[in-house]
Image (cartoon, rainbow, N blue to C red; front, top):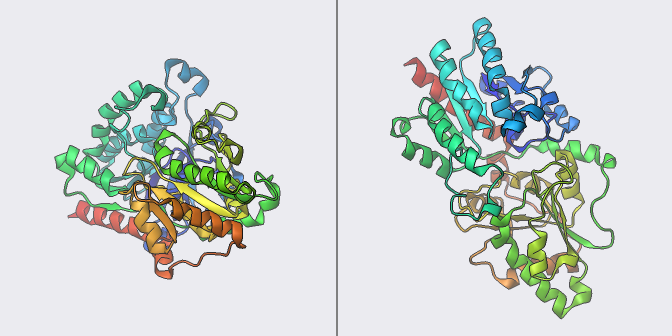
Length: 424
């Protein structure tokens, strides 16, 4: 199998995590994997060299070039997928001419690179699978105010609408983190309704916690000594306000009634912006100011490295995961939180599949924002304030079901189905 993943360690990007966590297990399930990625010299995202420690040394990694962003950005083309597209075609053409591969697997949110799938399928007869970690072409932001839309939304919306059918209509299999993503594209393109397809979330990768723990001395402490620190690490945005607002409301009420007790609480929102360091716009602090809890809320827009994040989660007294108002949002980042076994409060859209996963684990404080009660949140706060936080013990069946190893097996079953269908 040849895996197409423009971002790959040491680049600290969320969309390469599935590949990284699966590589140690592919061979055990009958698949030898090689990866084609963009050389990190052409990537302007943060790097984390510790990520390389989790990648098996025997895995072949092929690197391609990309056009320099300082030139392409003048034309409005900063996407790593667009900048590397020609180099991907050239490199993979060469690999497919000289080596035998049974399958090509696109696992990335840099979707434009997937349009090369039909080319390689037509020229070399190799089927391909697309992993939809996010929606490719989506109407979600069409009715949103301009301030809430991603940068260059007008261009990307039209580009995605044009490119998606070029790749999806000829795919041989689909993997997604959400049932809704698969249903949407199968409804949009009737010719793929019989394709092998499976909803597979990211998995919990135990090894990461050990790497973070071993290197914790390298990371500066972001949390305030003498306080009860509750941490969320991940993107922010107005779409999460419905999940965060009830928490800020109860915090405000608690401080008003008992400032000495509730004044010990600090809520951290870390890495909330995808913008380059120092250029991120706060999206959580305005909400905190609205509820008058800004003195107890810390928003750090700059993203920190993956293992720095894990180390910070392990240092926290409690953890908080807010979900998007998009019902299809799955929050694959829930697994690092679960691995820490820290007291956890999660608030999601009532239709989010993340709620089911968390309930299977046995998380006590998981709610949807339409039905959460003030006393639910207050109980979580009081438990942290009044007791030494204890490790949470989760359902062993759920731990196995959502492990990175099991998620890899699920992927391989899709690959096997694609190959069997392709050979018949």
